[in-house]
Every structure is written in structure tokens, then in C-alpha cells.
Length: 204
Image 1 (spheres, rainbow, N blue to C red):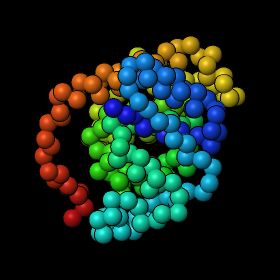
Image 2 (image 1 turned 120 degrees about the horizontal axis):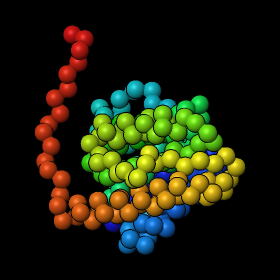
Image 3 (image 1 turned 180 degrees about the vertical axis):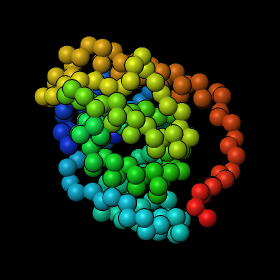
Image 4 (image 1 turned 90 degrees about the horizontal axis):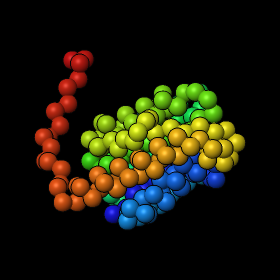
């Protein structure tokens, strides 16, 4: 079993990385492999709704000049998913959102149905709004959301400060144990078959 964790912070070794490392260490203790993949600081595209990924059945984004398709490739081998992001203006990092929307649209098949969780880091406020924003694509893709003892948030501004948030770090460990438990449970009890999607548009 493997969990892919995506560090959506422009700071490779900031507080988002620290929270994900706490999760990774706990997953390892529970016998679950993990990888933390950093989105980096190079420019990324937003989705332009060209639909080439769908119309051509690519299974990946038609644009291959940033990290989106690399993430899709890594997700194919993952059993669980965790996104981590700092909170900017009450929202996740815009670069993470731009990439993740393309991943979910073009590569939804490698996301759909997998246990998933999100982690939001903030200096003071807005973390719950960022957390909810990151949850919504997983809910649309039928992913079981992995919870903890609180919302999956931790506090800190300067790199390393989140380590002082003892409840936040405990929340990360609880999240990791719940993820490991769910992955192990699903191994022997596969999810039920889903009905075909019946889209309904309100404007006709």
C-alpha cells in the first residue's frame, strides 16, 4: 500500500512539508509506504477547458509542459492521496489548485474512489476554508475522505513553527493512522460497484 502526498507549498521545506513528514513517519510505523511530491516553483497552467483530454481519451492533460501529467503518473501507483497546502487569502496555494483541477479532470480515473485527505497550514486564519476547497474535488470523485480528531490543519508561519503546534501534529498522526486503517480495511473489503453517472443540467 502506498500513499502519494503532494506538497502544494512553494516552500519545499516549510510547514506544509513538516506536517506531511509527520504523516509519512506515522504511515511508515503502520506499515504503509508513502511519497511526498513537491509541486515546485516553476510556472503551471490552469485548465482552459479544451476537452482534448476527454475527446481524445488521453487519460492525461493535453498540455505536457509542467508537472500535471507527472502527478497523474504517480497517482496511478497510489492507493491513497493526501494534498497539503499553505493558506493564502483563505484559499490553498493557487498553483496547487491550477494543477490539481487539471489532474482531476484529465486524470480522474487514477483519483476516483481512492481514500483521500487534505492538510491546510496557516499563520492564523482561513485554514478551514482552504481545507474545504481542497476537499470538494475528492467528494466529486467518490473518494472516501479520511478524517482525524479535528480538521486537518496546523498553525505556523516561519519554517518549522508548525512543530510547536502539538495538537496540530497529533492531528496529523491521527490522520495517518486513520488512512492506514482504511487502506487495510479496503484491501479485504472492496468498495461496492457504482451506478453509471446520470448528469443533469439545470439549463435546458
